[in-house]
Image 1 (cartoon, rainbow, N blue to C red):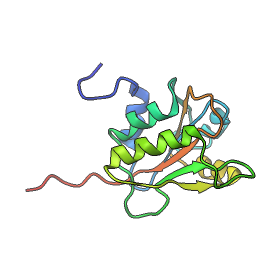
Image 2: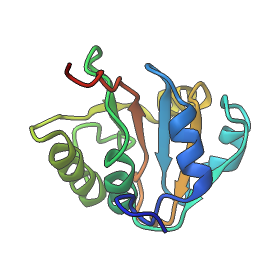
Image 3: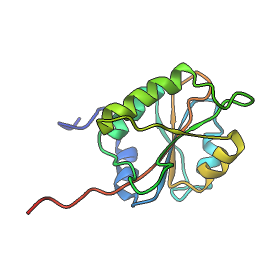
Image 4: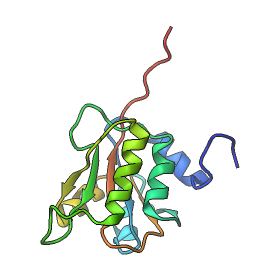
Amino acid sequence: MLKGINPLLNADVLQALRAMGHGDDLIIADTNFPSDSVARQTVLGRLLRIDAPAADVVKAVLSLYPLDTFVDDAAARMEIVGKPDEIPAVQQQVQSEIDAAEGKAWPMISVERYAFYERAKKAYCVIQTGERRFYGCFAFRKGVVPPDAE
């Protein structure tokens, strides 16, 4: 345990978050997502795990991880097949965590299921959560941490 760091963030996840650069994508996926096979195609090349609900994982990650302010798709959700405008409870909860972390409304874009899979394959890494509700899959593009004011 470390002070000031959410205990859900294990050493493997912390290393990956630290290694990522501006513009790299992070995928946070539910238990039904083909996480292992997709993770093998990512930059990291292996699956990371945090066995907790998606909203808790997103809260922990966003406590350290800056979102990219230069793009419109820094936060994305997998859309429901046949119902692209429907936002299930798991996605509403994650949206609340994003807004809280950013201190303002930061709407997620929706990404069609197979387009989401393709985005995930190009990501830096995949974190599979313990989320059992459907459509608990999200993509977050890393931003920058500005220098300290002089």
